[in-house]
Length: 474
Ligand code: UD1
Ligand code: CA
Image (cartoon, rainbow, N blue to C red):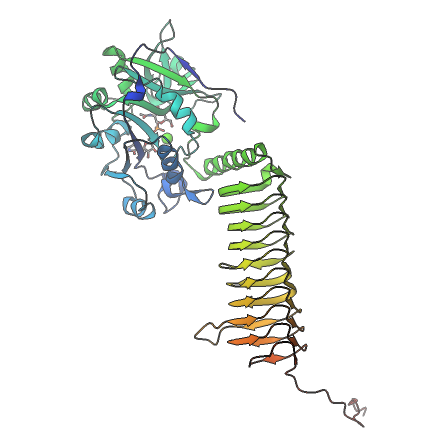
């Protein structure tokens, strides 16, 4: 995907930046009108999580001393949604420009820190690129991330002098035709020593086409004050893609999808079609795992060696043991499945289920908050809810644990080696003893003793002399 390593240009002299602690400022105050949504832009989901959450995760990977998030539009909703994030919220009441936005965080910035500026709507930037960028930022060095764009429309353009040194940034709306022909653009991401940044921000003027306080004007201020501007050209467009509307949101999602699929393939997973795999969480996979088309992996998913996931499966927060095969069209959630199991097709494993090794759960079987012991089978058309099932149990087709009386849930306990005939209703709370056999079609309401055959159905009658009615002809 990437077009090689990004490259630093016009490196200035100076300092060991590793000595300078880092503060991150994330700009997230914009409304995102073009989203045409009531949800603030930075809360729009990418791979199931808010855009801003992706940026914060990347920021955290840099171990900064502090993360300040400048919020404004929909501020309450943003804070509520990301309440657990260890960040300092900074409010920007009026969106007067990117420079004004960073200035709101100025009172919180320690003068000896470096300040990395990120954007809540640029979610794919990687920690690797940022680390590289930060190498170009020290007490007298500013680092700027730029990108070569085939279509630079809408972006600020990078103005360089004859010796290729960056001089300033010109916003498209303020640019001359000649400047607009420049393809090197401002990503917005920069790292600046706080001691320098704050006075520059305080000096900003809004005498420009948009009447805004432009963060980009700090570049010219740096050049004026003899601070080196070290531009790093991003390896590709994808990483610095911004999100302004739903089309761009889908493009970022597509980049993310491919990135995650490539990471799994590089780790040895066979992905039948990387364009038809969605990873929306953290996946840990053993050797020789195969993921078929239209698989969605969410939350924390752990797949053992030789696991095979068939087409159209959704796995959310699950752990699957080695050699287990999940056939097409299964949904598994918040559960643990042992080794050598066969699940599906068309099976649903609901939260808090634990399946031991060699378990078979077949088509149209729903399992909820249930333990199934080693080697037990429920192969067809069955509901097992709130059940504790031993090992080597055979649950016949159409068996239902009647676990809910309209008020409370009750437990069904089935001992090792039991055989439940097809069409059995197990009215919980109820216990089936070890190696018990339940005759097909039984409705079991009391304990069925171990080792014995228990039946609970009306006996069959044949009515002698009965005749089938026939329609009278007149
Ligand atoms: C900005 C840059 C431009 C760059 C482009 C990259 C400036 C002046 N221009 O332009 O050089 O090429 O990003 O995408 O910086 N925001 C606030 N408060 C504000 C204004 C903006 O928090 O008062 C946030 C927005 O929510 C957004 C980000 O800052 O996340 C960028 O603002 P936006 O107005 O979209 O800047 P651009 O015009 O795209
Ligand atoms: Ca923008």
